[in-house]
Length: 259
Image (cartoon, rainbow, N blue to C red; front, side, top):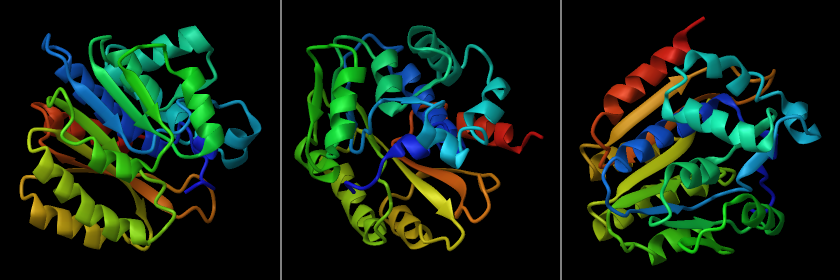
């Protein structure tokens, strides 16, 4: 959606859940000295300022990273990366998933990011470190996901993270993810989705579980960030989950339950 801008939502509780799982998975993958591919379908601008007017208008970061970050150990890959990026860009910044990936991956890994929104694409180009193995595409992210799989190298991870502003996205994703998995059976596919009051994600999740029986599902609940806000939790469905991610998902869920 060209109307969607994540600056209103950056650093919210769903970002913490999503990025903590992503950071753990990438940290695990890079323990082996072997190149990998990283693909992201809806990249956004990469770096957000939580002190700007858009972030302050919603207050979602106050209910997210500001409330949750101290619950993570300093050596957790998410917390460690967040601290490192803040040292470079200032204490009010929050990295999107492209910067988490760029920070955790190596120069010999291949990184592919799709972002169709003109302003977000330009900002992403500015925020990402210069790396000859990084590609930024101004194209539909789901189209890129289909076109680039299987990637080279085949070892790797794809993050699919749509805006979910169109109800038809749920049916589209339910068909697309198994197709990508069939083309790239060794790839880790991480799909983020919101938990909304009307549970519109439920049919999609049932379809994915039917297509991929060993699908890992991690869901956390949290209070609405403000009155009338429909998101009451965050979900991540993972195909070919790396070793330890299921246990890590449980630990992260416990952090969301702490008072």
